[in-house]
Amino acid sequence: MTAQDEKPPFLYVVVCAAGIASGVGKLIAAARERQWQVGVIATPHAMNGFFDTAAVEAQTGRPIRSAWRRPGDPRPFPEPDAVVVAPATFNTINKWAAGIADTLALGTLCEVSGLGVPIGVQPCVSATLAAHPAYQDSLIRLRGMGVRFGSPHDGADGEEFGWERALDLVE
Ligand SMILES: Cc1cc2nc3c(=O)[nH]c(=O)nc-3n(C[C@H](O)[C@H](O)[C@H](O)COP(=O)(O)O)c2cc1C
Image 1: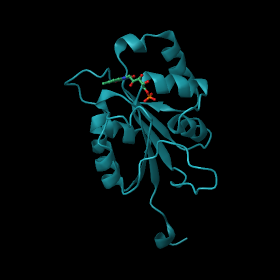
Image 2: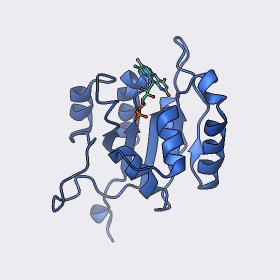
Image 3: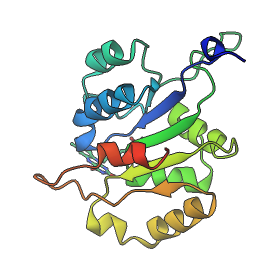
């Protein structure tokens, strides 16, 4: 294979409905600088005003995916070389660990867990929710599946969210 045949690596960015999601453009800009092609998959809740969807589509050059494609439609994104979930909510982390696939984001996460590609997660979960035993069990289960976690963020104002750290986790 020549250098010209090599496709740029493709990164899935899964966005959940946490307040901090409004900053996801920082992650996409950093990923583009690191030569990733980016496809965003957002939860249905995240599409409901949590980030600027038009700006993200302009940044990635691709429509955001949030719903399942129709049978017979082609897959809109290529297979991923890596996946980051940022921000990751309490809800999505617990459902993913439990194997629930009732949104495209969750179905994708459950599926890519078996692909062997690196998966990095930046949770945004309050300390009180993080203390729930189901959440602690979910972290153990996902870590056991090889999923990599960045340092937790509790959504408090003034604290920097680790957008670039999410990329470091998969490189
Ligand atoms: C303004 C706002 C901010 C929120 N921030 C968070 C958050 O930081 N972390 C979290 O786990 N849930 C947060 N939630 C609650 C989630 O949106 C809710 O649990 C939702 O079901 C998550 O859906 P998803 O995991 O499918 O994106 C927030 C809700 C609202 C309305």
